[in-house]
Amino acid sequence: MTRPSVRGRSMGAIYVRRRRRGAAVAAGAGLAGVTGVLGLVAAIATLSSAEPPDGRTATEPAGDAAPGRHAARPVPPSDPLMPRSIRSTGSLTTVSGESPATDAPAQLFSVEVERGVAVDGGAFAAAVERTLLDRRSWAASRGFELRRVGDSSEPVSFRVTLASPETTDELCAPLQTQGTYSCHQDGRAVLNAERWARGASAYGRDLTGYRHYMVNHEVGHALGQSHVPCLGAGVPAPVMMQQTKGVESCRPNPWPLEDGADG
Image (tube, rainbow, N blue to C red):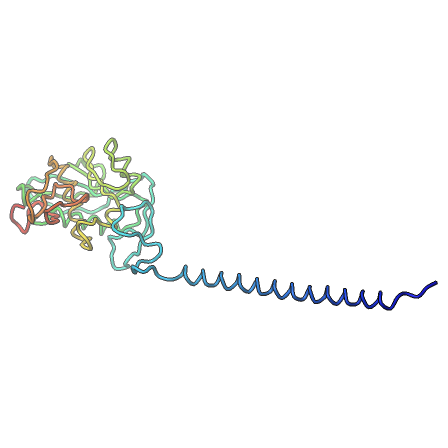
């Protein structure tokens, strides 16, 4: 038997040492690669969380988009007229309560809220009543009285209804409100709850003014009024103009009578 060659053992040892050194280098390279990937992920996360350059949050739409269905919105706790949520149920509830009775002849109306629209029904009905009984609204401009009743079985001239976009579309058919607009149909002034919550670009931040307009415009249809165009640059827009779509060269105006005088 011959002895194993010392040279053979030496070459084997060198080969093993080279394999170990190669494995160490590969491990180091792999660790560096992982570290680089983690660094890249962290950088992307930092950029993604930054505020867009125009100051909007990443989920805030640019411009005055049409109201989206069930869209989340900040709800000021001090505003009882702001829906906390809007969900289509198709079930309408007449709000109880009525205007003080007088001896004068009056057209009766009621106020309804869809069950899925989470708003203070009493506060909404009071807001509608204040709008319609204002000296600049229809009763004063046409010389008759309007009186709210809270009995759903009592005959009324019209109803004012706050409804979800889906239910608005159903109540307004065959008119095409497209989940965006309000309407008058079959003795019911239907107010789109998303519009009630968000307003329209013509009114800017004046949400109260736009709500006055919504009520007066749709009730105007209930009282037999038709659409009217802008009558001149810089003058108050007629309340029967479709101001939700814009006021052209007119100024936004929510009242049949502007400041107590014909507008």
